[in-house]
Amino acid sequence: MFRSAQGLMGSFILAVGLTVTGLPSYSGNAMTAALAAQVDPGYRLGAEDVMLVSVWKDEQLTREVVVRPDGMFSFPLVGDIQAEDRTVDEIRGDLVRRLTKYIPNPNVSVAVTKVISYKVYVVGRVNKPGEYLVGHYTDVLQALSLAGGLTPFAAENDIKVMRRARGGQQAIPFRYGDVRKGKDLDQNIVLQRGDVVMVP
View 1: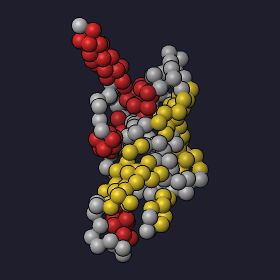
View 2: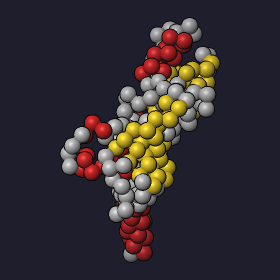
View 3: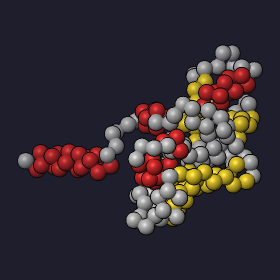
View 4: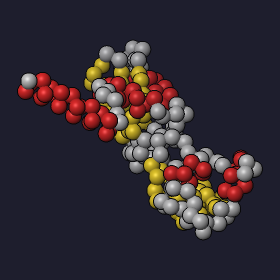
């Protein structure tokens, strides 16, 4: 009787743990695959992003790499590789070309496992102003939603997206009231990393 109750309690704790975390029980490789599947193939990497680079049948050439502040990462045999503002396919092609000098027909895979560089900022009259780390491309409406929406005193048609461009600042207007009514939807642009959404 005691053993049965103990077993039931263990099952209950396990079930509660899964419910609280909301995460399925992945193995390490499955978790990496699940994270990689969430990243848009066209995503361009930035500093601090993490990738898993693997060369088939070579454990010494399978490792996680981090994009350094200079936009590069280091990999055995080939040295530094440019990663910033490139897709995983472009990086994989570069690795294959360089590794071919040492390995015949290398089978290389590259996957983004952590997106850390894609940050946007929402400031001003929103309910939750601050920095937002987003793992996918995000438009202005989505950023405002992350920030809890506008406060009652916000000037909804005077919102601006501040963007650094070629050493200068660019102010892109966004009229929330118009977009909410289905007008001028093109102004709901996809934000670039580092953009600041200002809500007066």
